[in-house]
Image 1: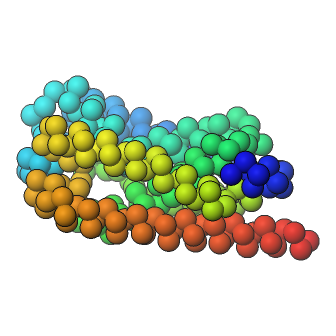
Image 2: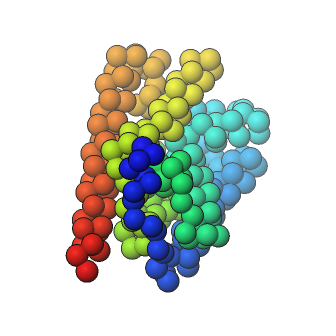
Length: 235
Protein backbone atom coordinates (compact mmCIF):
# COMPACT_ATOMS: atom_id res chain seq x y z
CA UNK A 1 0.00 0.00 0.00
CA UNK A 2 2.83 2.37 0.82
CA UNK A 3 4.47 2.13 -2.57
CA UNK A 4 1.21 2.51 -4.48
CA UNK A 5 0.12 5.51 -2.50
CA UNK A 6 3.54 7.12 -2.62
CA UNK A 7 3.60 7.05 -6.43
CA UNK A 8 0.07 8.40 -6.86
CA UNK A 9 -0.11 11.82 -8.51
CA UNK A 10 -0.48 14.76 -6.12
CA UNK A 11 -4.02 15.82 -5.38
CA UNK A 12 -4.80 19.29 -6.65
CA UNK A 13 -8.34 20.25 -5.60
CA UNK A 14 -10.53 22.23 -7.95
CA UNK A 15 -11.95 25.62 -7.00
CA UNK A 16 -15.30 23.93 -6.39
CA UNK A 17 -13.89 21.40 -3.93
CA UNK A 18 -14.12 23.41 -0.71
CA UNK A 19 -17.69 24.72 -1.16
CA UNK A 20 -18.95 21.30 -2.25
CA UNK A 21 -17.21 19.56 0.65
CA UNK A 22 -18.73 22.15 2.96
CA UNK A 23 -22.25 21.63 1.63
CA UNK A 24 -21.82 17.86 1.89
CA UNK A 25 -20.61 18.18 5.49
CA UNK A 26 -23.45 20.53 6.45
CA UNK A 27 -26.14 18.25 5.04
CA UNK A 28 -24.65 15.15 6.69
CA UNK A 29 -24.26 16.86 10.08
CA UNK A 30 -27.83 18.16 9.85
CA UNK A 31 -29.23 14.65 9.47
CA UNK A 32 -27.00 13.12 12.13
CA UNK A 33 -27.62 15.81 14.77
CA UNK A 34 -31.35 16.10 14.10
CA UNK A 35 -31.74 12.35 14.41
CA UNK A 36 -29.70 12.33 17.62
CA UNK A 37 -31.86 15.02 19.21
CA UNK A 38 -35.08 13.28 18.22
CA UNK A 39 -33.77 9.94 19.47
CA UNK A 40 -32.50 11.35 22.77
CA UNK A 41 -35.78 13.11 23.49
CA UNK A 42 -37.86 10.13 22.46
CA UNK A 43 -39.72 12.20 19.86
CA UNK A 44 -38.82 9.81 17.03
CA UNK A 45 -41.71 7.38 17.60
CA UNK A 46 -40.84 3.73 17.05
CA UNK A 47 -43.26 1.64 15.01
CA UNK A 48 -41.29 -1.49 15.82
CA UNK A 49 -43.34 -4.40 17.11
CA UNK A 50 -40.65 -7.08 16.78
CA UNK A 51 -38.81 -7.68 20.05
CA UNK A 52 -35.66 -8.95 18.29
CA UNK A 53 -35.24 -5.66 16.34
CA UNK A 54 -33.84 -2.52 17.94
CA UNK A 55 -36.30 0.25 18.72
CA UNK A 56 -38.13 -0.81 21.87
CA UNK A 57 -40.42 2.19 22.49
CA UNK A 58 -40.42 1.60 26.26
CA UNK A 59 -36.67 1.95 26.84
CA UNK A 60 -35.08 5.03 28.34
CA UNK A 61 -32.88 7.69 26.76
CA UNK A 62 -29.64 5.74 27.38
CA UNK A 63 -30.99 2.68 25.60
CA UNK A 64 -32.19 4.78 22.67
CA UNK A 65 -28.78 6.44 22.37
CA UNK A 66 -26.98 3.07 22.38
CA UNK A 67 -29.38 1.89 19.69
CA UNK A 68 -28.74 5.08 17.72
CA UNK A 69 -25.01 4.39 17.51
CA UNK A 70 -25.62 0.76 16.50
CA UNK A 71 -27.26 1.56 13.17
CA UNK A 72 -25.10 1.36 10.05
CA UNK A 73 -27.01 4.38 8.76
CA UNK A 74 -25.69 6.50 11.61
CA UNK A 75 -22.13 5.25 11.26
CA UNK A 76 -22.06 5.96 7.53
CA UNK A 77 -23.58 9.44 7.93
CA UNK A 78 -21.19 10.35 10.77
CA UNK A 79 -18.25 9.20 8.66
CA UNK A 80 -19.41 11.37 5.76
CA UNK A 81 -19.91 14.36 8.08
CA UNK A 82 -16.45 14.04 9.64
CA UNK A 83 -14.57 13.36 6.40
CA UNK A 84 -16.29 16.15 4.49
CA UNK A 85 -15.55 18.54 7.35
CA UNK A 86 -11.86 17.61 7.24
CA UNK A 87 -11.78 18.08 3.46
CA UNK A 88 -13.60 21.39 3.79
CA UNK A 89 -10.94 22.60 6.25
CA UNK A 90 -8.13 21.36 4.00
CA UNK A 91 -9.16 20.18 0.50
CA UNK A 92 -5.57 19.02 -0.11
CA UNK A 93 -5.55 16.68 2.89
CA UNK A 94 -4.09 13.28 2.08
CA UNK A 95 -2.80 10.15 3.78
CA UNK A 96 -2.95 6.37 3.63
CA UNK A 97 -5.78 5.90 6.12
CA UNK A 98 -7.50 9.02 4.85
CA UNK A 99 -7.75 7.52 1.36
CA UNK A 100 -9.35 4.38 2.75
CA UNK A 101 -11.85 6.38 4.78
CA UNK A 102 -12.66 8.58 1.77
CA UNK A 103 -13.60 5.45 -0.18
CA UNK A 104 -15.57 4.28 2.87
CA UNK A 105 -17.67 7.44 2.73
CA UNK A 106 -18.98 6.74 -0.75
CA UNK A 107 -19.16 2.96 -0.24
CA UNK A 108 -20.97 2.96 3.10
CA UNK A 109 -23.36 5.81 2.35
CA UNK A 110 -24.27 4.18 -0.98
CA UNK A 111 -24.99 0.88 0.78
CA UNK A 112 -27.07 2.81 3.31
CA UNK A 113 -29.15 4.49 0.61
CA UNK A 114 -29.64 1.40 -1.56
CA UNK A 115 -30.43 -1.06 1.25
CA UNK A 116 -32.85 1.32 2.96
CA UNK A 117 -34.73 2.41 -0.14
CA UNK A 118 -34.90 -1.02 -1.77
CA UNK A 119 -35.27 -3.29 1.27
CA UNK A 120 -36.19 -1.48 4.48
CA UNK A 121 -38.33 1.51 3.49
CA UNK A 122 -41.48 -0.54 2.94
CA UNK A 123 -41.44 -2.26 6.34
CA UNK A 124 -43.68 0.31 8.05
CA UNK A 125 -45.56 3.60 7.68
CA UNK A 126 -42.35 5.58 8.11
CA UNK A 127 -41.52 8.61 10.25
CA UNK A 128 -43.43 11.89 10.17
CA UNK A 129 -42.72 15.59 10.83
CA UNK A 130 -39.09 16.22 11.86
CA UNK A 131 -38.50 12.47 11.85
CA UNK A 132 -39.29 12.41 8.15
CA UNK A 133 -36.80 15.24 7.56
CA UNK A 134 -34.03 13.40 9.41
CA UNK A 135 -34.87 10.16 7.64
CA UNK A 136 -34.73 11.82 4.22
CA UNK A 137 -31.44 13.55 5.00
CA UNK A 138 -29.80 10.31 6.12
CA UNK A 139 -31.21 7.87 3.58
CA UNK A 140 -31.76 9.89 0.41
CA UNK A 141 -30.20 13.36 0.34
CA UNK A 142 -26.81 12.64 1.94
CA UNK A 143 -26.20 9.41 -0.04
CA UNK A 144 -26.96 11.06 -3.38
CA UNK A 145 -25.08 14.27 -2.54
CA UNK A 146 -22.00 12.40 -1.29
CA UNK A 147 -21.65 10.37 -4.47
CA UNK A 148 -22.26 13.41 -6.67
CA UNK A 149 -19.64 15.46 -4.79
CA UNK A 150 -17.12 12.64 -5.19
CA UNK A 151 -17.89 12.42 -8.91
CA UNK A 152 -17.42 16.17 -9.34
CA UNK A 153 -14.39 16.96 -7.15
CA UNK A 154 -12.93 13.63 -6.02
CA UNK A 155 -10.21 13.57 -4.80
CA UNK A 156 -8.90 11.58 -7.75
CA UNK A 157 -6.32 8.82 -8.11
CA UNK A 158 -6.78 7.54 -4.57
CA UNK A 159 -8.34 4.13 -5.24
CA UNK A 160 -6.32 0.97 -5.78
CA UNK A 161 -6.57 -2.68 -4.82
CA UNK A 162 -5.25 -2.25 -1.29
CA UNK A 163 -7.46 0.76 -0.60
CA UNK A 164 -10.45 -1.30 -1.77
CA UNK A 165 -9.46 -4.19 0.52
CA UNK A 166 -8.89 -1.97 3.57
CA UNK A 167 -12.22 -0.19 2.99
CA UNK A 168 -13.98 -3.33 4.29
CA UNK A 169 -12.33 -3.09 7.72
CA UNK A 170 -14.72 -0.51 9.16
CA UNK A 171 -17.97 -2.09 7.84
CA UNK A 172 -16.89 -5.54 9.05
CA UNK A 173 -15.97 -4.11 12.47
CA UNK A 174 -19.47 -2.59 12.66
CA UNK A 175 -21.00 -5.94 11.67
CA UNK A 176 -19.11 -7.79 14.41
CA UNK A 177 -20.17 -5.18 16.96
CA UNK A 178 -23.83 -5.32 15.87
CA UNK A 179 -23.93 -9.12 16.06
CA UNK A 180 -22.16 -9.29 19.42
CA UNK A 181 -24.41 -6.60 20.92
CA UNK A 182 -27.43 -8.31 19.39
CA UNK A 183 -26.47 -11.62 20.98
CA UNK A 184 -26.17 -9.90 24.36
CA UNK A 185 -29.43 -7.88 24.28
CA UNK A 186 -31.40 -10.18 21.91
CA UNK A 187 -32.08 -7.35 19.46
CA UNK A 188 -30.50 -6.50 16.13
CA UNK A 189 -30.49 -3.26 14.10
CA UNK A 190 -32.02 -4.69 10.89
CA UNK A 191 -34.29 -7.63 9.96
CA UNK A 192 -31.67 -9.16 7.66
CA UNK A 193 -29.31 -9.38 10.69
CA UNK A 194 -31.98 -10.77 13.03
CA UNK A 195 -30.39 -14.03 14.19
CA UNK A 196 -33.32 -14.81 16.47
CA UNK A 197 -35.85 -14.73 13.66
CA UNK A 198 -33.69 -16.04 10.82
CA UNK A 199 -30.86 -18.07 12.35
CA UNK A 200 -27.15 -17.65 11.77
CA UNK A 201 -27.24 -19.48 8.44
CA UNK A 202 -29.66 -17.07 6.79
CA UNK A 203 -27.96 -14.05 8.35
CA UNK A 204 -24.61 -15.29 7.02
CA UNK A 205 -26.06 -15.59 3.51
CA UNK A 206 -27.52 -12.08 3.80
CA UNK A 207 -24.18 -10.68 4.92
CA UNK A 208 -22.30 -12.41 2.09
CA UNK A 209 -24.78 -10.93 -0.38
CA UNK A 210 -24.25 -7.41 0.96
CA UNK A 211 -20.45 -7.87 0.95
CA UNK A 212 -20.57 -8.97 -2.70
CA UNK A 213 -22.73 -5.94 -3.50
CA UNK A 214 -20.25 -3.68 -1.67
CA UNK A 215 -17.36 -5.23 -3.59
CA UNK A 216 -19.13 -4.56 -6.89
CA UNK A 217 -19.69 -0.94 -5.81
CA UNK A 218 -16.03 -0.56 -4.92
CA UNK A 219 -14.97 -1.93 -8.29
CA UNK A 220 -17.33 0.51 -10.00
CA UNK A 221 -15.90 3.43 -8.00
CA UNK A 222 -12.38 2.24 -8.79
CA UNK A 223 -13.23 2.04 -12.48
CA UNK A 224 -14.72 5.54 -12.50
CA UNK A 225 -11.68 6.91 -10.69
CA UNK A 226 -9.36 5.19 -13.18
CA UNK A 227 -11.26 6.63 -16.14
CA UNK A 228 -11.03 10.12 -14.64
CA UNK A 229 -7.29 9.72 -14.10
CA UNK A 230 -6.77 8.31 -17.57
CA UNK A 231 -8.61 11.25 -19.09
CA UNK A 232 -6.57 13.70 -17.01
CA UNK A 233 -3.27 12.09 -18.05
CA UNK A 234 -4.16 12.51 -21.74
CA UNK A 235 -4.68 16.26 -21.47
